[in-house]
Length: 279
Picture 1 (cartoon, rainbow, N blue to C red):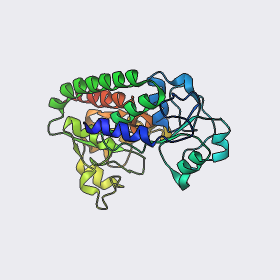
Picture 2: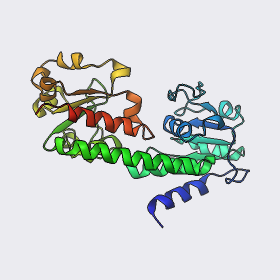
Picture 3: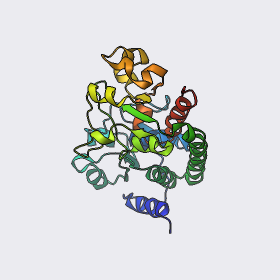
């Protein structure tokens, strides 16, 4: 039995409640932006009655004031859900909801592409859209494979800096984000600076300038208004290789921080930057 199938089966068995988990839910509450995107992508959108305040995609999702970080059990239960999907489980949220007879599926942040694919398949199985979920994963794999095959040869010997915030927090190759760059064979400048092993070190301006990455990816454009112009205006950054060549990728914060169907958008943005890189 494959690892992917084991993950899916374990997840389905973990969805507990008064009703059988084989019965497709008709009133889903998603407190996970990634799960929200996936549910709509596999055709389960009509079953979703409420999503959390961070679920901003797709536009038609029934966004509410519900929080996945500081959840209010009474507010969640008020939507009369027969399934609640969460990415975090603070203060025994899942146990409390199950005690009310509500099925719960906990999908922690994926650490690898394999885990991301497994969660999509899992949501498909639980929501009654197994076939569309499997088809989505198949398409994602094919698209990513083509993009990487085209971009990897151009990435040889190049380095990348991924910016989470203007104060220079970054993501190493140990993270889900970093693994996208690893697909292309890019050297991540944050790796050598991760002394604490968190995967998300805070770099100094001097460190980034000294490393002179060939590609800069800004994942702080919505939160913090970062652009190629603001980066070039930073003290000393005009000498950074990516600034010189204009290889600064702006990617929506939410795309860069989620592990659902729009992973393909992230990979496509990196591939496009490589395609236009002047070497």
